[in-house]
Image (cartoon, rainbow, N blue to C red; front, top):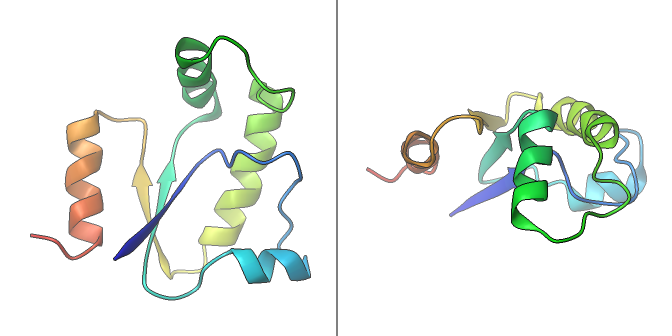
Length: 101
């Protein structure tokens, strides 16, 4: 089983690597997959798929969250998948990272 975290993280409170809460909510075991999407592409996806955006869904805020998320998953335990590519390319990488042939 794989856990997939999509970047930028959609949360109204910033993630902090020093936060005791973060250590409880960020997994550290299993097949950990981080889907890395550029803030600009994430913003376009949000705008194209919703009628209304949240106050934190700006390119600036998404950039801050993406940077914090990358800090959290850059410990060598996570497989970082480029989420800016086609769905089929991403799918192949996720299956490979999850150990599915």
